[in-house]
Image 1 (tube, rainbow, N blue to C red):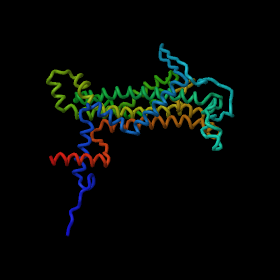
Image 2 (image 1 turned 30 degrees about the horizontal axis):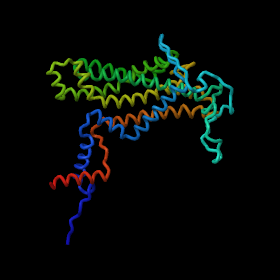
Image 3 (image 1 turned 90 degrees about the vertical axis):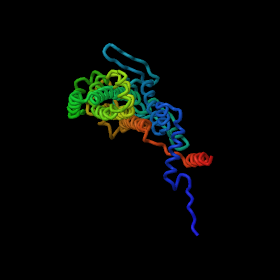
Image 4 (image 1 turned 180 degrees about the vertical axis):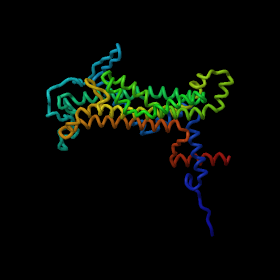
Length: 360
């Protein structure tokens, strides 16, 4: 006597599994616009949400604790922070410069949970490291944002124009891109940083932004080359739309996923590039500071005061990781091929509803 195997929902029939998954996904996005679908997918990415919360916390902490001191040309913005020290003050040394931060309760043999006057310790001069690290974080974040935005603007425009017009325009722009690619960014940053590093983080960010857009330009070009042959572009041409309107109103919005994801990667690379330049002495210069410069200034005290390296290193790693995780979340949200696997309960419910519909 033979028995017919019973297919459990979501296990033994790949066709049914795929059908159930598609039914669940279609039901979840039913009636939603593309922006709402992207937003929902992004909010469901736990890593991106945690990273976004951590990044916002770091930004708010850095810019509120020691205040803002920004100057460019004739524009000066200066506000006071809630922290008792600034990054230029030299208070009296406490606890031999060691961190006063304690996170171990007294019943576990620690000093109790407290911050103290200098939670991150003091450097060899006596400056409060918390205030110095917060100022360094401000400068590094400023450079990261400016480089990301400027490189995105240049790379997007060059890549889109090159792909849309093709011909000699494509040849000229892509050869120019190839020339920029062959120039080592670290060497350019070192040379220019030595010349204008004293002008502040803003000018250093502008220089770096003019040299790190090449990869994005190539990606945008490839995306626009495929989009320019689509029906909606032909319809826009027939309707009499100008070339600029077709590129910036019809094509680029459909390539926004590639642009946003690669912008996050550019920003993560920018903060690491600035850190390397400042560590080598070619980035932000005194009297200002950045995370890389803090490590460079205190490298002689590595064996005696290691906390001078811990804190700027932690913030460098945290910012770079959070930007990368946010980029992963955006990639998954914009890519329609990325699917969230439904639970076993959802699969069974979808299959039962489909069977009931067929029975009717």
